[in-house]
Amino acid sequence: MSDSAVPRSRNIWLAISLCLNVVLIAMIVVGVWRASQREHEQSIGHAFSPKSILLHLPPDRAAEIQRVIDAHAERLGNLADDTERAKLNARRYFTAEKFDPAAYAKAQDGMLAADSAFEAERHAQMQEIARLLTPKERREIADRARAERNPSNRRHR
Image (cartoon, rainbow, N blue to C red):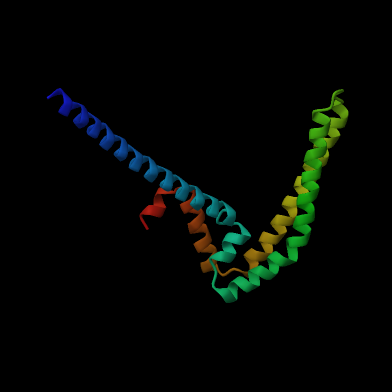
């Protein structure tokens, strides 16, 4: 009698272990899937990003927006590089063995100027894009932006 109890006990633990493994695998799969979805959403950008606007328009309308994006791409790339260089420069002064507050402040000012130039170009790009959009398209973008701020609304659509 005691011999039959041992295998039965082992079978129960084996069954529990298998069930837990199935649950763990399911959780991992869901986690990986959700991470890939978030990554995709982040790569598109928020509702007001040029890439997001482009992806939500019909092909003929998207071509107009793509021309604006292309017209600003090189300048935005150069300004992004300038911003990164300015950040690295400021970091170099921040971590220097002999900290020089004046040099660090000047590097911070350079970083602010580079960031401002980049943002000004992005704003100019968005102004051009906004001029090309119809009122209906702008309304749809605003609706997507509201849905981004309140993710629970997406489930009820």
